[in-house]
Length: 346
Image 1: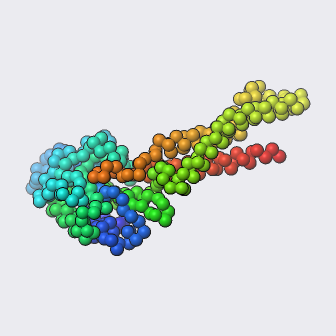
Image 2: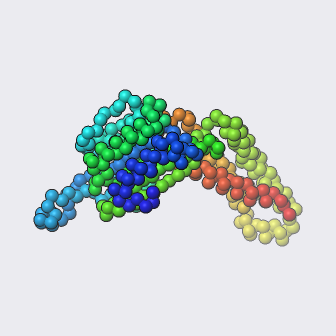
Image 3: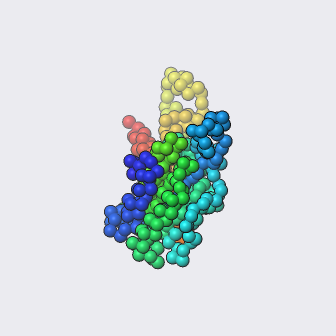
């Protein structure tokens, strides 16, 4: 996939490797993962603009030259006109294919799509032209689905659907791995600068949906509620205990020790002394990290169904949030280890 550098190579990859791995029942992908829901193929086109050197464009060597925006990002509106795709048929009765690649779809009109995509060079919006394929459709056999997909690719290629005007091509699919009990979001996107050389990027993120459907997920939620109780204890009982400890230590000091203590803390109240200490800062970060992580996890719980049964749903944002929660969980564990050492008052 990383060797795809031209549009012809991209068409070849989708027509062979992608089609076989997604639809062929004996493919290597299906031996270990089960594709879920719909696969989406999308393209974002640049808008036509006036060429910067009009006199140069009028010379014989540049006759009928058309110029487009070099990049699409959040500040540049992409192409929105209806495309001409000869021999493209409307939605078929099998519901294997959904969407019309001739019509522009805005991100706001697709509630189950991703919000945006950070490219290597520019951030892209989720607008574009899309066509979705139901990889689990029972109305067609595996060979019929693969053949139908390849026929659509031939029609789109003949219409130059991914031509010089294209600035971004995306392929997104979600699969399920039963042994690990994890969903995996696969996104391959190809940035298409005006140089003609594609820049491929692959993002593979495992994620969980945050529901309590299995015993392991129910146990994880119980542990989260238990950790929440411990965090509440750290946020309430521990500060009182620490402040009392500071008071007790100050009462045992000699006059010289109190003078040194006063110079170090600037005659701060004992409560503020705790908050400005290493223990207080560690407790504050520990509580803030877990509460933020807990709230995000609760608000990020989604239904297992990948959107409506006849519509694509992107799990790119869900997988990204899950990855961030894993990192936050690691930070929380590190803070717990650091804080536990401070309880040993040697």
